[in-house]
Image (cartoon, rainbow, N blue to C red; front, side, top):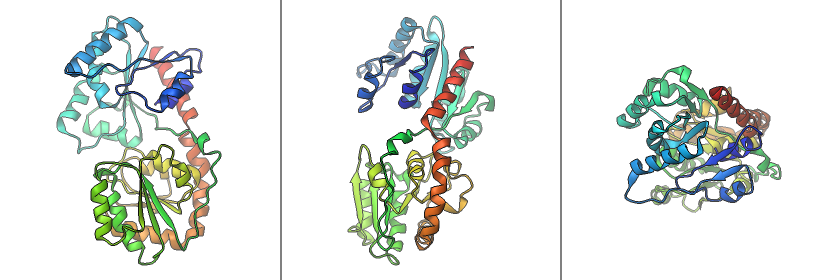
Length: 343
């Protein structure tokens, strides 16, 4: 979202204001260097809750008189409903990153009931759009698909240089959460080591499942071959040293880490869920059913045993992925949508 805003700010007909709920972290410096983007300090947290936050936001909207309010994530959706109290209601756009039938019933109902206050929904994948139609009963015409994007220029200095295939590095970049399926990767890796005893597994990311995942690795006897890197701000130098990237999610709207891996040329195996098939397109033989550790292990071994062919196939993905998910191209699409909505 922020990187698209940086591009939009270069257009003469756009002036961008960003109101983060919790700050922008390392992106603050990048944004502050752009004169046409103004960051509004986050509202202070307190006991006032969402209602007071929404009312303060409504007051701010009345002062700035924006043409468009673009809401991101569910918390902004909650306070965004109150924007309809504005003196001159702006066009309201709401990006939804993820929704499935497993979402709480109240959340699906809330999205459905408040849909009339939104002028357009942006879904992060075709799979998310389909879920909005099926689970939240939204009209297809009200939903636009604009993929999450990647600034591939940050990979220009990278050279893909995996180790020898006799000692392969199998890795993933993800939050350590049950929905991300890292437990299935660890189980699969334990089987892979039977054929590749020198293999390593790199898990880059952090989260509440870290302790459980470490315990699982120890129980399976592979704790010495699995490295938990924790959260790394720019992990792409490690990505470029992986023989194989594994994305074992149980549920997934799209998958930025998978896009980045393919954009570098790393062969990949991923779960056949959500928007992931939209990334791999016709490469269905790199997809596996979710929650199936043995099938995941078989696919990993298949690729490692035919690694030269996998490298060739992965190299073909580089231009395709870099075009489809390029931040500049998708920012143009978002700008066109904004212009259409404001007439």
